[in-house]
Length: 201
Image 1: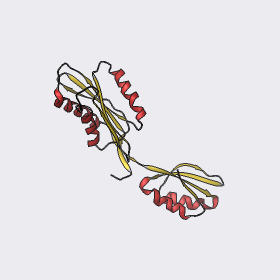
Image 2: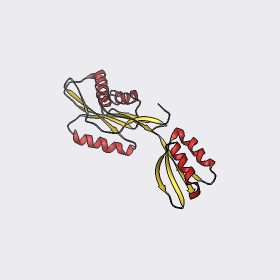
Image 3: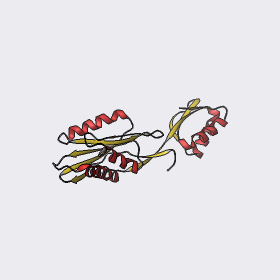
Image 4: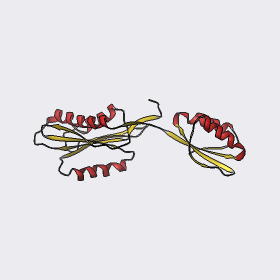
């Protein structure tokens, strides 16, 4: 995979259900890109499943610097959150939260049984969800006069650049969304035309 792309999910699907000795484990996967979103998601699941015993989760967030966390929510240490997080890492995903909700069935599963159950519920939902590759981009503003408009448009067309916004008055400005790995090369092409006003956003 390219250094300027990453794998994540972009849709929430129905939870997976794994059962072991009368305990029921529901696996949920959520796309998210801000830690502020975490608490409301967990709170919503706690309301939906108010009779459940545990709401354990793992998440990975970030692109260059990955921030990850595992939460056992009262289960024995490392028996729930870490197996969940392990499944997110196994698929090399980021900006993903997986929550496994446990309904206790009256039979203790032991640490090994719990690890297997949480891992399996997380694996099942991540096997079902659609994984997408997202490309990292950066924006470039190009200011130009009417005389330079054709030169600017030629570069945009030749390199099939995405125009985010444009203002084509006498003094025109175009904002381009450029793939990170191509950014410096494209910026240099515009900077060669010394009459343009080229600015990173």
